[in-house]
Length: 127
Image (tube, rainbow, N blue to C red):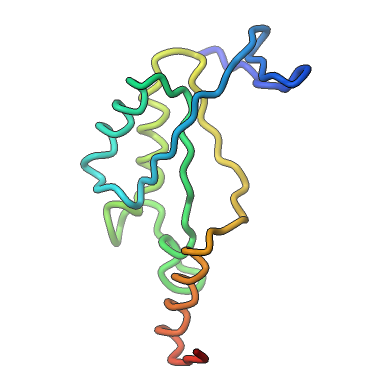
């Protein structure tokens, strides 16, 4: 497949040499049963989306400090690698791209969940 670069030119996205508009939606793989991922991506694509965004919640993948599961060994919805492969295989033209952004920001929900997990694992409760 011919990989083209997306760049910003005069306030618009350009893919190769053509203007490109991002039609984006969120699909949170960790909130959907794994067996439904393909169908959800198909439905997203059917609406005209060419970009899928998703959080990668580290507190979901890091079972204990320094121990990660990205292949679904402990739970099917943790298989981030398969989700990314589904994204790559669901493309039907060169305009659909996949990117993983540096997601160091974290939602308030994830912060609270991480705090609860920490307190459960360490037995300290400062609330």
